[in-house]
Image (cartoon, rainbow, N blue to C red; front, side):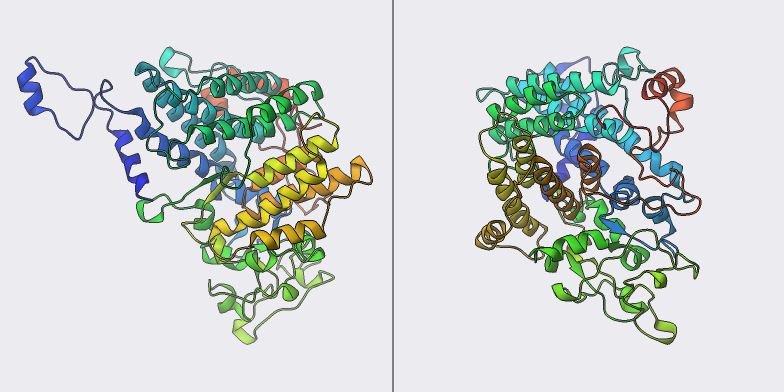
Length: 531
């Protein structure tokens, strides 16, 4: 969208000086601005896009979490051998770079938020400062959920001389983040400054409040096992404040390819090797087929026969009955783990020099290769499903687990249309939800069904890190780890990313404290809330 053009203006933080007022008036460049006149609202699109870029694409989500949580799968032995990090937990040549990305992008994004907030506070823009705080908590909670203990209380204060911040324990960071989020939402005033240049909500303060409380709900639900009292307190506060009430409220960020702000997951999935080697997992496809989920024909296709067709973005067959998912952990090396030995192997397609060994497995449709595809930050469906989880646990909520679950399923089906490549009508979504109600025979049965739906829904929205985080939190779906030769996690699904190697030189004392607090720095070290 053209609003993103204004992002470029955020670099125009120039200061000017003059000894004569008339001279200054005549000779001041109208396209530059000092801090005294610069509008910090101009930074907001950058802040928004940077967060979206942190949670998508080669930053880590596709190269790690998409397949750790078995939403996607890959043979990862051709040109796309970098998917060995995800599908088989085996390091590729750039693994250390991938480890670094979320950390670097997250703190860079949070620093820009902090810059926006400081300018906003100087001008008395209390609403913009509050929006910045919501965005800061969203960003750094994302970083914490990937790594564990992180700098928070002393983070982003290099200008004040703190260049080696302490690592807060995740429990302390979460406590501070939830409190900061609560205070930020409460400070938003309808009589305050207008939020301008807003590519997410067009300045709608009510929707910003709902986003804040919906983030609070998700963070609170992380704590259900480790600190259920705090979880219930903040769940109640979020509900009382008002979370997303419909799909119109959800945080879905537009992309803008023409102006250089494309969807980075789509950028990745347009790479020829990715088009060929990235497939939906058998677990996901089987999940969708088991209930005739109407999303299946929108998200999955089997490419036409032959290697050339498999490497082409040309549309394949999206008929639900032909879809078959690729199990994780297979390759194309001709040994015991060659995909041809997979029990349900559908066979190669094509012939001669045009044979495609993995041709008949389902891959993502063109909606995932659209560089203008939206980024699904937090959806109404996810919020309703989290409320269903809370209700199933006996938390004090305003609805039943069954009603929240039905609303979540309907929202998930309706919002898939926001990709722009096929849709499910409201009546079809309601009919599907009615035909597939929540199993309330026991708390365990309900939680299993709810969290499997969260896994599938966030995965289909390409929010792979959230699929992984909720799997860590809930234990659903029940996944079988891949134990491929040479893996870096002892044959277990990774539960975190390692701290970036750069921290050992830029902040060695902070890093040492974080590792000591965490009890290690391995791919399977459990973070505080992951019990």
